[in-house]
Structures are given as C-alpha cells and as structure tokens.
Image (cartoon, rainbow, N blue to C red; front, top):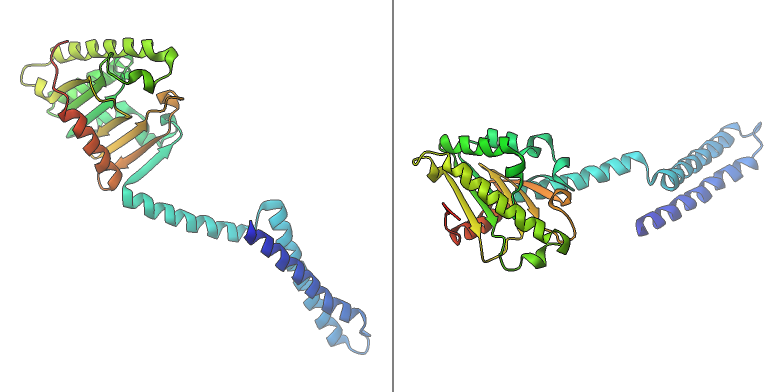
Length: 263
C-alpha cells in the first residue's frame, strides 16, 4: 500500500513536470520558433500521457500488466523453490479440487507397486467403495504391502476431536469398517495375509488422515469445524521434508498398534 501511494505521488509529480514544457510551448510563437515549440509540446505530452496511463492502470486495474506479471513470476519462483525443497506437489481446499492424477484413491492404488498405507478416523470409504477395498486385497495378493489403521470406537479423546452430532455416527462407521476389513482379510490365503495388515488404534488419537501410495502421500488434518471432505488437503512426495515427517508420524502409530486378526 505504501508503494502504491508513493507511486501515485510520483505520477502526479510527472503530470506537473509534463505540464511545464506544455505551458512553455503555449508561450512560444510557433511560426518563429517551430522546432522549440514542437520539442516542448511533444516532450510535455509524452510525460503527461505516460503518467496519466500509469495512474489509470493503478486506479482501475491495480497496476500495469507487465509489472503485475513480473511480480507474479517472482512470487511463483519463490513458491516453486519452497515446494520443491519440502516435497509439496499439490494442495487444494478439498480433495475433489486436487489435480486429476492425485484425486482418485482407486486410480492411485491401481498404480501402486510396493507399499500402501492408509490411516483415518473411520475410513468408511472402504465400506462405501467396495471396488477400492477389493483392489487393496488384490494388491496384497500381488505382494504389495498394505497397512490400514483406523480408530477404535471407544478411543479416548474422540469426543473432543469431532462435533457432538456426528460422534455416534462416526463410532458406528468405525465398527462397520472394522468388520468389513476383517471380512476382507478372511478371503486371503495364509501366505497373503501378511501383506494386508489392519490395525485399530485404541489409545493415542490421530490428528491427520494419511493416504500413502509408494513414494506419494496425501494428508488431511482433522478439523473439528469441518468434515473431512471439506478440509484442505496437500500431496507430497518421498523426496522432501513433508513426506518424511508424516511417514515417521505414521510409523510411530503403527509400531504402537498390533496387527489384528479378530475383534
């Protein structure tokens, strides 16, 4: 804002300065001093015109197009550098607004080749989307390591993390998801079950939902005032600080929660 004010003052000053040679030209007899008359007039008109145009751009469009583009490019370079440093490759106000290649759980799982980690309060999507669950089971049969972590319905602290009117519904979803996962686990052969590990967190509350496929991870921080589908999400890769930070966090939860094979 201070920059704009100083720029307005500079433009007004140039308008005044440009008016001086125009005033001088008005007092020159054009017939006797044609060259001087033209120089003063043209010089003044050019200065006043440029100053007025710049003022109009600031008042109407917020600045001249080129200066705005330069500023945007400068800001973009800074953001790109920061994103590359920490491994951020996508971010949006909700998952449905992510880039197409990061949006679909099913497509991401379909492209996986080594590891899949999923954690969340209820992960009821695995009940609602049987295709996704079946795909996870098929990946386990292909020896892709699948680990799933959800919350126990009676975990301490859950009531403080969610709105009161959804608490009972979430607990019911947790139980339904768990039953569905156990049923899916039962369809695997004994030598395949080690690739499909399910865990139920019973003590420390998780604060984020993580969906990791190989070296890419999407993260949603739980907000009490918003549903998960309306919560900001970001995507990171295994080549930066963000990915490593959330992997370490997930590993701590997983290491503290034994693999389950029954209720």
